Length: 261
View 1 (cartoon, one colour):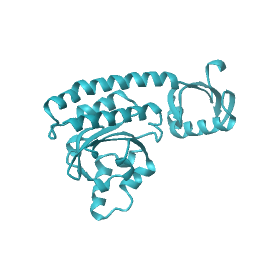
View 2 (view 1 turned 180 degrees about the vertical axis):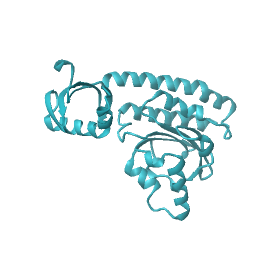
View 3 (view 1 turned 120 degrees about the vertical axis):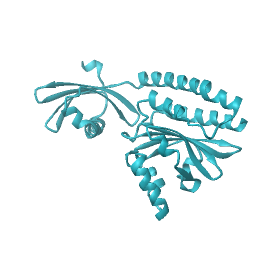
View 4 (view 1 turned 60 degrees about the horizontal axis):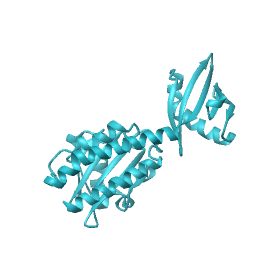
């Protein structure tokens, strides 16, 4: 078993002993501490398999219980996940081209249409994505045209002015972490904007957002819209380099399309 795992340890009574590892002891402590923080209750409830991310590592975690002891093994699966993730990404890009891009180029973009079937492609196919929004610009206002993981009938009436958007998001695809989400939505708000924040807290899972993959696209060198992908459980959900690859491809693809429409 030692040869098949990257970390093998025994956990009992809030203490653990490292049996074998390819990492330093300090690194194992960091990995296992975060794992326990995120999964302690599921572990105690008897769950015996987890998928866990720590910084740039992705682990498959198996648990065997021996009395009061938990024998826990961590195996890196970055390469397997990377190949599977890339395959899914190319599949999704193909569907976007077939179902949306070709139609927009032929018939134009319909601002009144519900494009939640576009956002649903991301939520259905990527376990890290809990919610997705698709928005485009009308004047200086961003209007939501599609929503998954959110109630579209509510979100379609929500709009954002450009000065309400975290400024770095306007420039390039990027991962937006919890602190930046707080800056965008909570800091320097007046009474009118606080009403919107309270609305988003109630209906748009605002307090649950831990990480966002923000994908802007442009028309005539000006921001035209966003694809925004959300994770509600893991601040490092989009740290895999393949997600930034997807974000950059989508940004260029949508920019090219909307410049032709």
